[in-house]
Image (cartoon, rainbow, N blue to C red; front, side):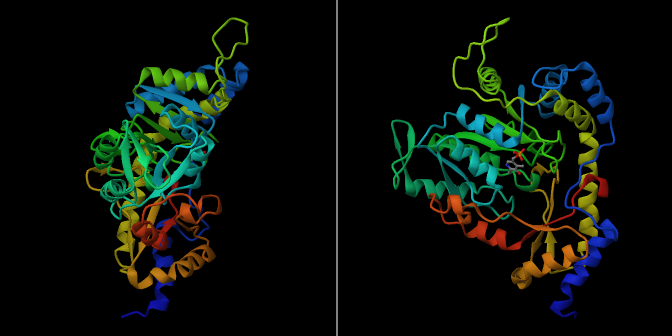
Length: 388
Ligand SMILES: *Cc1c(COP(=O)(O)O)cnc(C)c1O
């Protein structure tokens, strides 16, 4: 029996069996397709900004891939979230339910609407919002007034439910859709991390009223910076496009804006990159799944950790591979991070929980025992598609 202080060294050895001995980042993009050709074509056309053929093509191909009726491309995932929440009817002094275990952009977008984030707990199996804990919490802390869900403590309307598919693993969407219906909440999906993941055969980002994607440099496909809204609602898609292009009315020369919009449209040059990346997405997804299988094999010999796998009934894009530290070594998370990073293997803990971040520490929240459990134990390991 090996003693526990040998454990981080055995873990480093196992990860090196997959990644090799050179330094390796957490997630690097792969540019192995038509990137140079499309970007050059875009420059040659002189249409590099908010008008151009690649933006329209990228939107069509995103809709085609995800099965959403419409995709609207924007400058980043955070901007997509901001507009998605506005279109979901989120107003100043509303509250929006979201997991405490998420990237800060999810909470920031709520704040940009003048609304308050209201944090809820996650599930061990999915790493996403827990519908049954959520139902219990809302039963006890909210009431319905004129068809609106009201937080009894603050008196504010709880307008929307904003689950996030952690590391690409789909949430329990059937459960969450049921709770949304029961408490009359609009469901918006933060699918920033889960392009290519599906829940019972349907792509994430297309299950709620609106979903959003991110194409930041560290995501499954990248446009440098970029994002998109997905929806099956044609009127909402039209509103999304209008709001993200300064709310300018179409006219041959007049500058007439019918509301206060945003300059959130994805530039054509970024969309050119996106078109090239999207062509490689099926290959990236297959590589990421292969990488997961390789890690599973080498980690089978390390009982102190388990590898996070896709939930039952789901297909994950395996954007980021994650270790779950066992109870016996949960207190050694920082030793694991130090040993792996010192060995040139970039690893990261999951995000600090939102209610512990200074701007959000006074926001309403449900009990968060599972989020606390996961925050202590989740460690991301190198996940680039190129590693497989
Ligand atoms: C990446 C990410 C975003 C934001 O995307 P950006 O394109 O970086 O603005 C939002 N939510 C989650 C959960 C993310 O991981």
